[in-house]
Every structure is written in structure tokens, then in C-alpha cells.
Image 1 (cartoon, rainbow, N blue to C red):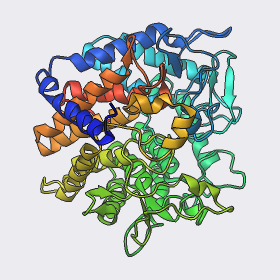
Image 2: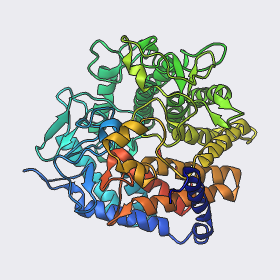
Image 3: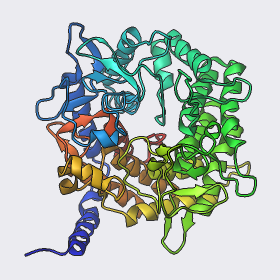
Image 4: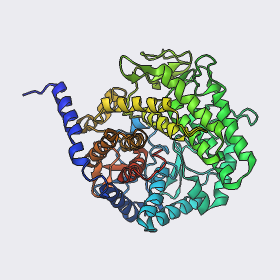
Length: 515
């Protein structure tokens, strides 16, 4: 008997919602932390670089959860499309290690040491950092990490295409600086020297080798600003604060005067989606600005972050659909259909359309709805004014994001790239579920929304998502990157999920979010 798809979906939703009766009973018994502990123990025992002539304590980017080994040439599965056709770059880091992709994992290792009092987790993170700083610098002086370059453990050399590009992730600069302050200063100074196209205006390039394409994406600029904001915090030197604010203002000044919508990449003119505002701006860049504010105490970053979030939320919210549009013109018009693809700018093919797709599949699209949700509640947490009152408009925006996520739950393979992914890897549609990163970001968001709104339903939602992540991803002492694959992968965001589970394990502890 063939079951109607609608019945299947309704049953899945009922099962997903029903999980709260079980998940909510023991929300302080440490069970989420136990999964984190098992995963970290497995990684420390089996996940380090034991390949090639030189053995190091670097953690491998890909592990087969069945054998707990890292193959030199791992099976591709869904990775061709997830990495936008770059599966041999740092985005996947096959046969190697990538300290940039593992920043959320480092944060989890350090936090787990604090929670448990066991120093071995922090020690493993320190050792990983030291080894990377010893073995993985590019000839130009920048670290061999990020979305293009990584350390190939089988050959004990850097691999990928040699570009330095850091995006989206919020690194634990504080711990890296504690381990090796000179290496961190070297990296951050080289960001200034080799990524800034114009040191007077703040125009920058996501790649350190400028070439003919100066792509000043907001979420690479935000990464640079974060680095400088940290160095200001660490050293007190004014030049670093000035640099961070210069890059923040480079993007913020290129906003529409009437709508306030901030464009992504001003140097690119009308290419690469630069003439639009998306959740890359209202999510990733906004969250990076908020972190800059936390690091420096300078309210200019808070102003920029909130100034990205509110206009997007105003023009993107569709009251009839109870969802946000994924792509806006700077004049505030949504784009229900794909913008025309041109020979001049074929990259526009990657632009999002229609309403947001909550459970994204591609790593570096312009669509980051879960980060936009996180940024909205993060901004609310930081919004306390002189009178002690917080900005209720930001909480309203966050609650709407909560509604959007709930209406699109349980997680599934969305419409964008669905056909391509299923053709490349049919099992991805059969397994259901989503990537570890999506679970992690959503769990973290609902933990923070629960604290802000004091509504138990948000904590229950976090519990349901966490339980599904365990049911679908946890295998042989480790979380897989996706339910359809037998592999742990850094680029699938397992580190973000582990950090979020620590947040959920004790929601009263005010951790700063799975970013």
C-alpha cells in the first residue's frame, strides 16, 4: 500500500512533537553533556593525525565512524554540491586537518574542560593549535586554513589551492593567543597587509591574492573585523579597534538611504548578488558585529549589527506566509523568482529565492537563516539601554524566527539543491534529517530564546531537535555530519552541534552561542 506523502509528513511531525514528553523530563541530568563527552573522547583517542611520516595532534577533518579512521581519499557522497564544486579544497579538507573549520570544536573542548574540571580536553585543543602553528603557514605568512587551504596529513604539507579565506565562523582567538601570541599577531597583521584592498576606506578581498576579482563579501569582512577587535581587546592598541571599525563601516555605509538595507559586497557592483540584501548580511555579518561589540565594548558595532537585522526583518517578513523572504532588493522588494542568470555573472545561480530555506545544504551560499535567527536573539541579549530595558523589537524578530523554524520542523532536505543532491547521493533523501550544523544552530537559538522569552516551549523545541540529532547522527561514539553518511566531518558542523548540546545541558549557564 502506498502511503500519501502528506500522511508521512504529518506522522513525522507528530512523532517529533511527541518527543517533548520524554525529552523534557530530565533536562538537568547531564545526558546531553554525556554525548559531548563521548564524542570528544572518541576524537581525542582516534581522530588525531596518525598518517604520513609526521604524526601530529591535529584533529582530522573527516573520520569514517565505522572504522574511526580518516581515509586519504574519502568517498564524495554529497560533498560536491555541499562544497559548491570544490571537494578537494579546505571546504572539505580530505585526508587532512583544518583548524578554521574546527574552531567550534575547539570552543567545545575548552568549555567541556570548564564544566568537568578535566584538563585533557583543553590540553587536546592547545596541542592542536600548537601543531597547526608549527606546520601550517603559507609562504606569504598566513595560516594554511579556511575554505581553500588545509594541512594534508598523509603528505605532511599544505593542500588545496593556496588561497587564504576565512568566513562565517567566530574563532576562539583568545585561546589561540594564549597558546602562541606571536603566531596570532602574525596572522592578524598579515590579514591587514594581504586582504585589505584599500586601507583608507576598508575595502577588502576575501582572498589574500587579489587578482582581478575583489570580492568583499560581508562575512569575510566580518571575520577580519573580528580578528582586529580581538587584538584590540588583547593588547589595548587603538590601531586594531580603528581597523575593525573601518571594515564595519565599509559595509554599513553602503546601505540604501531609504530602506536601510545593507548590501553584501560593494566592490562587486551588480555581480555575485552584491545588489541584494540577504541573511548573509542580517545573519552572519550582524552576528560578527555583535561579537566585535562584546570584545571591544564599542557601541558602534552594536549599532551596525542591529542596523543590519532590523531593516531586513522589516522588509523580508511575509505576514501571509508567516515566513521571511530570502532575498531582497536594496529597495526592499522580495525576489520570489531566481534573478536572471547572465554570462557576465553566472555566480548569481547560487542566489536564494522565495522564502527562506531553514535547513540549508550548501556551505557558503548567501542564505543563512539559522544564523539570522541566532543573530536576532543575540542582539536582544546585548540591547540593554541605560534604563536597563532591552529592545523588544528584536525579541519580536527572534520569536518570528522561532515560528519559522518550528513550522519547518522536523528538519528535512529542502527544495534548493534537492535534485542535484539526490542524483549525486540518493540516500540523502531516504534518511531524512539535516546537517549537524543545522541541528546545532537551531538548538542554540532555542536555548537563548527560552532564556529571553521565559517560555518553556522554546526549551522543549531545543530538546526535540537535540533528541533527533542523537537518533539520526550519533553512531559508534561520535556524531556523523549527516544522517545519510557514515562520516564525521568538520565542514558539516559537528563542532557547532556539540557546543549547542553543552548549552542545552544547562540552559542557565550563559554561553555565547553556537557561532
